[in-house]
Amino acid sequence: MFDFALSEVLVVVVVAMVVIGPKELPRLLYIMGQWVGKARRFVAQFQSQIEEMGRESEVTKLREELELANQKLVKSGIDPTLSIHNNSPTPPPAVAVVEKTRPKRSSAAKPKPKPKTVKGKNP
Image (cartoon, rainbow, N blue to C red; front, side, top):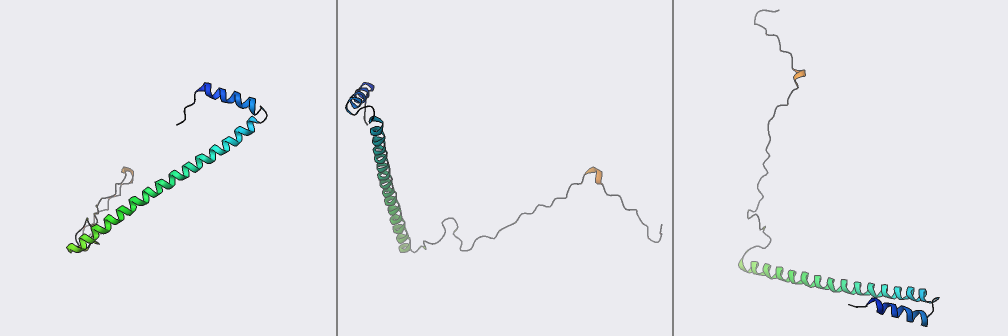
């Protein structure tokens, strides 16, 4: 926005040192820095308020469009509270899938075979 060349800044600094003096120059620069900070905060706050107003107007427009669409649905005989993705009144039942797997045994822990018994004979 502001375009200052290095030579212009040096001229302003030299004139300020002559007019104000080297003792008061740091204090003047400090005060000017405070004013610039206040101005920047004011501009940032103003910009955020303008952006907020824009967002509110967008939300208001969307709300009006939704209300208009709901009114059209009611006039056409469609209930606007129905779900868009599922036209059935009740949700489908949940189906659980269970896999039957046998636990794996390690080779070191094999079970011992049971002795066979024959009917009528006791060992």
